[in-house]
Amino acid sequence: MRSVYLLSSVLILFSFTSSKKEFTPPGTVKYNDTLFIDKCEIDNFSWSEYELDIKKKYGKNSIQHKEVLPDTLIWRYKYSCNEPYVIYYYRHPAYRNYPVVGISYEQALAFCKWRTERVTLLMAISKKYNGISIEYRLPSKSEWELLSFDIRNLFNADGWEVKDKKRAVNTRWMPDTSLKYKKADGLYPEIFAPVIAYEKTILGLHNMIGNVSEMVSEKGISKGGSWMHLLEDCRVGKDINYEKAEPWLGFRCVCVLRKKN
Image (cartoon, rainbow, N blue to C red; front, side, top):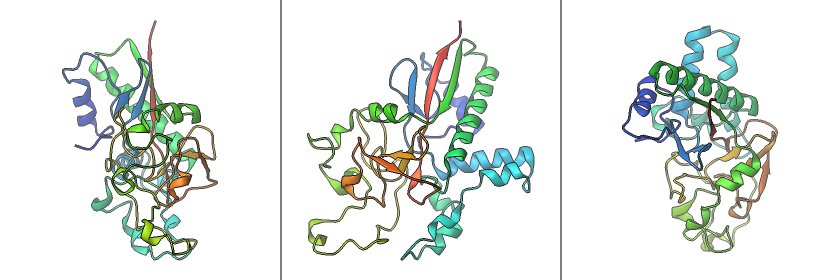
């Protein structure tokens, strides 16, 4: 099963009615009693569920609906032949489990707010979690780095050199036989991978390093690097800056759980 599944009502309610005694916010794994993090990056399917809800509420031609649409033109960059991605990447079922891109910082914040409202509503309907409140949001830079503490099961002792580069992460990695070639600007691997691809960390997180670089709450900073970044730029402590939506930029949420007095 996919690991986000947070947005369809049936699947959310299924999460709430499971036999588990301890509540876990949908789509997340537990770090401690109050902080949870998404197992994987937000994917196209989850974003399309968000878009559909906004479209039903405000109408297809509304400003609100237009504001949630990803910018598909980010695929048109130097040396690219990506016109099929402009047309199909967000909409085609083949990419439904791939990370959503073309999203701005403000759009990511709006998604977090909407997700909080939807899950809170379904918690109220279930009548089983009246003593709990939740909030989905972007992790802070320090939280993201903290939650990457167990990346060591993918990397060697120095904390960033991948044990098995092809198996563990999806970055702009070139095998030793390719090192004689110059690194031409704009030449990258074909595309990223599904959000649940590659090895999990001990905590159970996919693609904290590579695939898409993940926005944090500090605007303009992303973490973890992407399929378009060289491996040395994908260290846990490395900041990757952005100014706008990019074909390599996505996000995942953390969820803060609070018990009501």
